[in-house]
Amino acid sequence: MATRPFSSLLESHSLARLNRLADAQRQLESRWQAALPFALQGLSRVIGVDASVLQVSARSQAVVAKLRQMEGRLLDQLNEKGVQVNAIRYRIQVELLPHEQRNPKRNLALSAAALDALQGAAQTLPPSSLRDALAELVAKRRPSSGSGQ
Image (cartoon, rainbow, N blue to C red):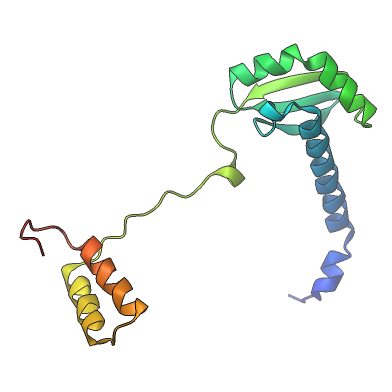
């Protein structure tokens, strides 16, 4: 398989088209968020526009209810900013969007042998922040035996 230089990929028509679509989506999202009152910013996201209907996902039914109350004003503001839409369709998306999800913290257990090795390493080091950090790590990870150790 022949390889192409990275610069030629950046100049490709399909990538340029994708970049224009991404820019348009970012602009649309920016205009939507700017039209919202401060208290509602970030609680909904633009999905796209389909036949002059703005598609919006919201975090809850309560957010949708509030947006519906303001729909006329929102449409006016969007049209003033160059977004030609006649209606807004809402969808509820309760879960976080993929880019907003955080990976859960993993509880990495250390074996007794690993804790003993870290404690031994800490004892061989001269007084330093590394020595203190290793000692603290061992103290936090070692199961408490009730003997005050």
